[in-house]
Amino acid sequence: MTKQRYFFLVLILGVLTALAPFSIDMYLPGFPAIAKSLHTSTEKVSLSLSGFFIGISVGQLLYGPLLDRFGRKKPLYVGLVLYIIASVGCYFVSSIEMLIGLRFVQAIGSCAATVAAMAMVRDIFPVKDSAKVFALLILVLGVSPMLAPTVGGYITAAFGWQLIFLILASIAVLMLFTVIFFLPESYQPDPSYSLKPVPIITSFWSVMKNPQFFTYAICGAVAFSGLFSYLAASPFVFMDVYGVSSKVYGWIFALLSVGFIGSSQVNSVLIRRFKSEQIVNVSLLSMLIIAIIFLTCTANGWLNIYEIIAMIFAFLCCVGITYPNTSALSLAPFTKNAGTAAALLGAFQMAIGTFVSVVVSMFKSRSAIPMAGLMAAAAIIAFLILIIGKRTIPEPIESDVKDEEANFLIH
Image (cartoon, rainbow, N blue to C red):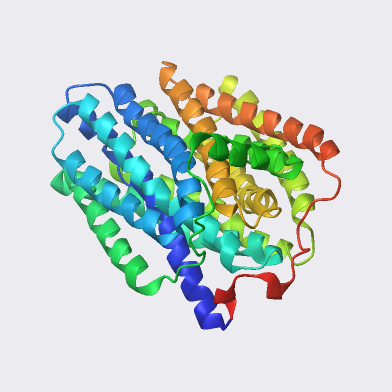
């Protein structure tokens, strides 16, 4: 594969992966304006974020079997069209309940892009390159947290929060045409793949019982939930507790995203010298130490807003290094069931993240303690799962697939 083709494919897959995060990040600065417009509270508006997470969790399990049965592109078309319709609907909502419901539908559509992109990474690139490709996807994905909140803050201030959803619909239209005309099909439809309930459940179970998948998918998802704690709590913490404007919040969000994105690119360098499982060990331990320090200092009131930003930055750096490696190790054992495995991986991430975001919205504390507490809990549990789960893995599959075994698209 030429370098030009390599990066072109990574760019398209990265943009697909970014659709769901962009849908989350862009409207975060509009929470106070949405609450005022729909005559509700900021905490109630955060349930629209939880509804989005639930939709992604459910939708990924739906798309996994469809991607393995019909190929990668046809289910992707359906998901993008559904996303466009729901996004336009969000523009016209008149109640918070309508917004929550349409955000759920919007998420069902967006997760087709996420699952398809992850499955295509496994289809197109050799296993030994997966962690590097996932890190590059995060680089493209980084456009979302760096630009979306800032752009969303200015749009909300100048034109109102409703316009954000029309812009999201327009982005999805462009993505649909890009997929149709420029993204090759990476997996031929498999008529033998049954869509009946029992075979689907059997397929999911065959993936679940793989010790390498289960260990790295679960510990990675739990670690990733620390990011969801920050996403769900940050509008309240920074705009309500510390009183920053929606524009300033957008810039804070963009700054913190540099930690997540930058560390993922450092991982591309680390992977040349160390194995993915070695990197995960160190990154999770570092995350654990940082999270405990953050919780201790926050609980005692020792941190100002700048120090809180610094602690979150350090935590997100650890997440940025952990995520591409746990994702690559989770999907490495699979070829035929890559779509199902990618769906389960994403479902775990979103299900646990949804739970965390709902828990955060239930707290009424006028501080950053709930956010710090949940980030610490995520780090502790993820580290324990890694330590226990590694004992069940004989020898992690990381680079035992030869380049020529990769999908025909590489050539």
